[in-house]
Length: 460
Image (cartoon, rainbow, N blue to C red):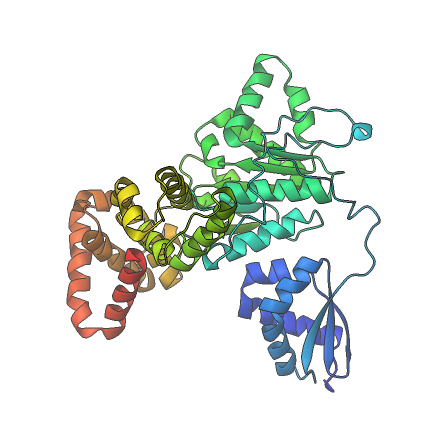
């Protein structure tokens, strides 16, 4: 290939990159890049935004460089540049974000149609969102959408348990869009509010107004979409609204407490459409992220409680002990600062244990079967639906038995109860799976190592 970078060469490199970084990563971060030339050993690419430039430079420069060299291109390093020429209306002057900002609307001269948005919480911004490994991808994807430009994934689907940051990211996206793109009509509401508006429109015989209003927006954000599961008419209207907006190239952001395929009583066609964009799991927090959140909150409290001292080791203790979710963790710190301020004492380890004894007792680590299933599926790189489904392939059956063994070891659930969570299996099937793993652990060192690692992950 003579050491140069041709369109054909870049096409071959892209094919290899899809395999190396995965289809989602490739579609989201690499496909939008445009080769800009090769000069003095520097391969240049154009990215559509500054944020994308920074993320690709930090996370994908090495794979790109490696695949270019494998393709025979003489290259020393990668350089990502931002497009210099952007449409004049692509980055308007920022507008101020107010605390508890109301619904965001187009400027008055752009039309006066009422958007029934839910209020935004002024605390939930990107600046106040603490980023760690468990939420890094979700944060990055949310930032991409918040730039207001074209995005290669639609919808963005965020899912995870209570208190892991889904709603925070949804509000942060809305705040940034309001600030950077006030020309866009942005609608943020819960699935429950969507249903209420739909039912109200049916009752008042204003369904055409409802359809027109929802199809006129530029960004639709729906929180807790699992709420519409089982509600047939609402699902039908949501499906048609979703399709109409996607067909117009409008952005959709959805959140739920579980992945699309795992939402019971949600129509298959809706599950399919929700899965066609970027689906991102906000994993349970790890120790480092919990500690980072506590340190950030503590810095904020130093302004509110000047002179109040916190002893070394207290934040580390809380990060180790309160692992359920971020809301409970932040609530414990708020309570601790208020209590210490009222009685005029330093925040020591003894004071923390005294003040938070009820929360610490409630936060004793309780592993669930659902958590075990998710961790085992992630570890063995198989789908959760296959783990609880009927497939008997060895590559699925053995991880399934590992999950059965861990469910019996780490939870107080009965065998019939565990069987119900494994797709309705009989308790004798669960017993057989447990015995099989007990037999194999002694002779299969890799299996024993997998089980030990999964147990540590689940108990941490």
